[in-house]
Amino acid sequence: MRQLLDFLVRKRHWILFILLEILSLMLIYQNNAYQRSVIISSANIVTGSIASASGFFTSYFGLRSENQELLEHNGQLEMQVLALQNELAVLTGDSTKFTGYSPDQDYIFSYDFIRASVVNNSVTNLANYITINKGRKDGIQPDMGVVSDQGVVGIVSNVSDHYAVIISLLNPKLRLSGLIKGNFFGSINWNGRNPCYVNLDEVARHADFQRGDTVVTSGYSSIFPAGIVIGTISDSRRQQDDNFLSLEVELATDFYSLKNVRVIRNFNQSEQLKIEQEAKGNDS
Image 1: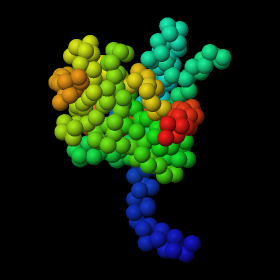
Image 2: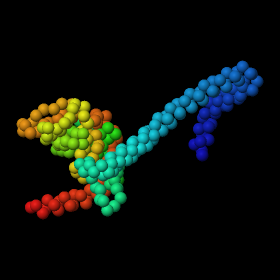
Image 3: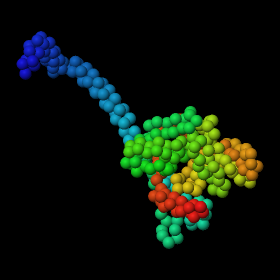
Image 4: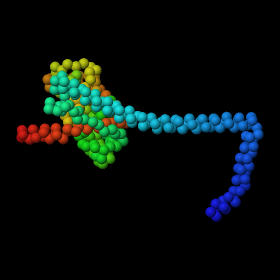
């Protein structure tokens, strides 16, 4: 308290000056119509500028929230589309597209997703990885598929409590089953060169396709449901084995600008893997 009083005593001249200035402005405002209008106009300009700046920042941060909501909504719509595609495959008897149906029960689509943000991403290395800000405590486990709004991104490799590392599609270690027009399938693999393209190898020589045709996930694994876009065919050539073709596929996902992803969760994955391992064990 004493320090405050000492400060007021030392600055008494400035305090008196400020009080007199305030009193003068009040008298001018009350007794002069012109000066009063000028002050009001100036105050309106300042207030408007502050409100405008405040509105800009509020809108900016509001857009981030709206963007996250849109990403969530897009993911839900994509899951609904994939579910309808699978259900339609059941009704039409197309066993090449459908996974997970039992005639003794109602159809249930066994996939959902977990939204995450990219915190680290490599594109120019020979073996590329992506780190996201969700982990084991968010329900993420190894061998879950990862997609963006554009298409396939990769597969979860390692998981901690709060982070997960994804083997990018731009990694020769990753192989993925791809499908053309729902009829011909092959193995997706990156050749380590252009981060905008991958190869679809082991495609039957008699496969019917054209440049620009879409390549999607086949659903022949427990990781991705069928029908998620991988890219479009841009070129083709014969492999060393004349019975197969290698197709160049332009990726749908732009890995350079990747910011948000969805991790695909298959509720029946463990059951599927267990019975497949049992079948393999019976052959040995």
